[in-house]
Image (cartoon, rainbow, N blue to C red):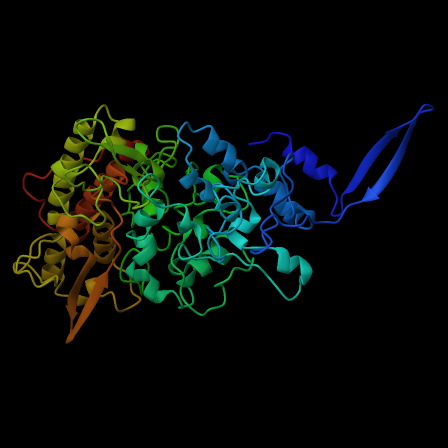
Length: 528
């Protein structure tokens, strides 16, 4: 990337002036010549303008859109050609994605750089080719010649979608399969997009709403007003024009606050109240150990103390460490097989026989990849063993809260069902102790909420169950938030144990035999 671009850009005005020094015997006379704000496009058929001055990296678009030009000049797109040449494996097939071409926009192929090089017998001179070097404005917005001719009539807007004519034209393929992985992820096909046009839900269940409400982006794009719900496409998390945050993200992934990119949406309902049926996108607060769950009277958790997964000092990339792991897959002879770019967004993913991650896979822990965990833990094997042990511990604690003995997904009073919730219904004979359909909030409902937060895949009945209140079946539901307990093991362990103990104390229940309800030291540190 050229290091002097920003300085050059600030010195340039919308209409450049070419200064010619004419040397004479008596001195230097300065002759000013006005220069048009654009050059004849090398590919006149497509109308790509490209660089106004290739040497300084100043685009033709930058003559008017100076602020965007200045921000773009610091991005990797602005140095895409140099990156390719320095890679050691530059090939002509790569060039259309490192230049202004038909890729990423609506131009008909071949266009731009690809059009100039289409005739291998008569290659243009290097100056013409340099006009189209790098991924410039027109790579995404399309040809600008008509816009310059009639600015108000022609608006070359970029697409907010991935394909066609979007980021996916280049950010795909075996070596950088961003699109292939993203398209299988819940950011692309999650069931939550069905609520994308609902007020209050669109800020996260519609990429268009997220852009405005989470990131303050009001700029136009081609599909902005088409009436369709947009998934969380590339432009929702990545800023095409700026590298103010690494990887051109719209918010940092290294900040252990609600400003974290992931936590902006994974932070909807993490504290229970009357009228709600369970936690909703509570993953972020749970990782941070802040403003999450129902805290039984007397329960304390050290403010600012959390499991190491939510500690930026111990785990600088926080969510992204596990959920956006990039790695190369090779075969037994060390030949390239696949480059995973982490855009399935799955932690410890299932992998196939070659080691390629599988979207939404259900498999044993032995078939999952734990290498990302070894950034902190001593080895993938150690991390796997901790994962298995943690799930077993959480399952045991969850069983103390409710065991659906008859398998009907309804919390029936003991002895039909087991656990403290069933016992509470038995000893109180009051079905409204667990009634998610009213606005009264009880301790029993708080205990259920905490169990929903901690639910594992093996105890997912907590995320979709019901109680019987009079003649009504009243449902409860929640999002999978705990990552099988791994999002914050010490906090969840403390919360579940404190919940069980509160049920014993508040409702006069017998203590469960053989269950250690001693809280971890972190939870005890502030108790009197």
